[in-house]
Image 1: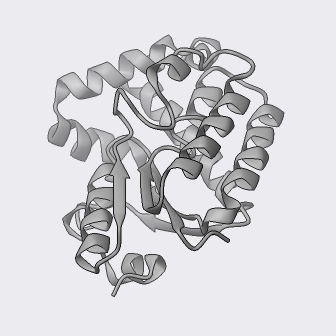
Image 2: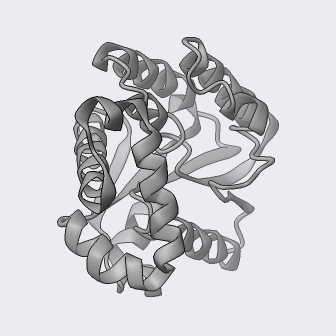
Length: 218
């Protein structure tokens, strides 16, 4: 265990509140006098997934290259390191979308786990019990039609959606529902600290006592 670094990882579907929660965590950690940094998943100059690496997502070597990039990041940085979407959304989701075999996803998870284990990783998964309800009656109104349409187009362009013939809003929901189930199955086997908590409007308004306790915040 390296006492100079702690790794806090926030995962969940698009619109589940990953970035909002990460921001709250970073602010709370700093308010407690801890050195903390947070990196947004969509950063173009992301320290773990730069554009050049992202462009190779369909390469057979992508999982291994990503683990190496993660290792390099952890060696460079100190303090509490907060990443949203960096463990699953930026990797498992790519592999899943490209219809990678389960064995490839499992191998990535095994190698990634060994790489991060020395840095006291804690992962929180914001779960959505009913993705259709969440996207149809909450996120679509919150983020707008353009945001939803962009994600629908992304889903339709993936090899997995083409194989499954997923299209439109129903295909979009099917894609993210299955992806979430894949993530939850992975988390049930991870040998690191994991908290699965239901995403809701209340989650986006602050940190619950359960979340604060999990991350050791007063």
